[in-house]
Image (cartoon, rainbow over all chains, first blue to last red):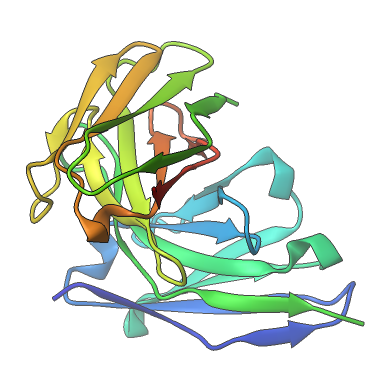
Length: 121
Length: 107
């Protein structure tokens, strides 16, 4: 069965960076994009960006341009999302989600369990 | 970026009711519209894709319609497990965007 397992909760200081991992299993890792979506506590979902694990190509929302970096290790079916220059407002649950664009449209069909990133001085 | 606006932001209903949630896009997105359900402390779950196609395993009381800029999610015969927050999301643009969410509460 498809599973996305994320790394554990993090506590970081303002200005630091955080790197969250997303390990995929149950499907061909290189056949589907991985997207990142975050959710500030009590607020809605915010799409951050995507990575194609096959090509390594990435794209992201303008809001995160220059602060977000997505990488992958295909040997262990894992995608990483690093967010730098953390601010208090970056405190959120970060989700990875598989992007399936194989049926003429694109959906986020499987999600990780979420990783809480706390930003505190 | 394409802006997605949902209404209402919150909604109270009773078990057995039929409810409708609306999502409007700031520009035409064809039928590139998905709906997700999220329960507290859990990741979102895909319900409807391509505006009206039911994701595998999702009960048939959920339905979607619309195209262009206006879309609806309808839940018929509300069940206790349906009380959650619902989000629309467009995949027309390579920059995905979500609506702000609609919280469905028990009356």
